[in-house]
Length: 285
Image (cartoon, rainbow, N blue to C red; front, top):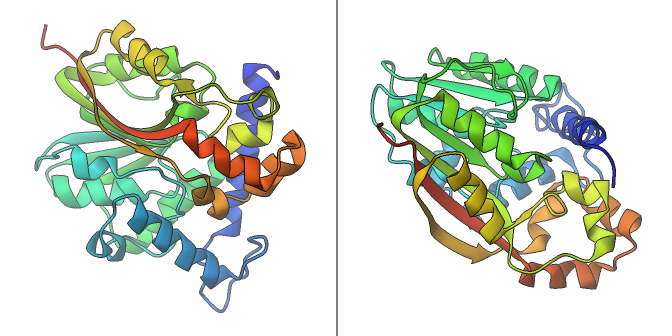
């Protein structure tokens, strides 16, 4: 297995390609290099996938074009019960999709901070914010294991299918605890495992980028949150995660090629994989 730094480098490179390949793809003056699909077909697929994992048509229509890349595994904003005036932090904010939805909920008196380690994603998100006229959203370049956010600063942390990509999840949750205000809430959608993956998939960097081989066993994932100091840790919802959702991620074919697993066996992995909505609270004292 590759080192943590090598994994981060590969993940960064993989999502840089996603950012570059999805930029305003339906605009005639732009081109798109999404594999095996036209630009607009990729955008339509992102919308279809997002509807299946819990986003409404109203939500999808309320954000700038190009913000939704169809790479999530749930809708953390819908379950976060955001209030006007709150400060929200999105771990692994990508092109800004969930940040913009959160911004609509917290209003002008609130603020949303998105953190992503991929420069191309941060740049894309900033362009989307400018395009949408968002004044209460800020995007910062940084790793979720070392958040560029002050202590006790945010009311709510959200994340959508990103923490599974980190090779040091314990550090991520400790950082989340640090930046939350006492009484602050953690609401994440993520991939967890109920059965071990085959070694061929576990050792595949492509599978790591595609959200599979970096996923933790469910019990271990929950224990990492508790170990960071969180209380009221619970799984609000858990569903089987169809691996065909990965069809909008350009790493899916690479997983098949690199790991040697057949497309049929890849679909069978769905029995081991769950999309979980996890809630936790930083105690007030």
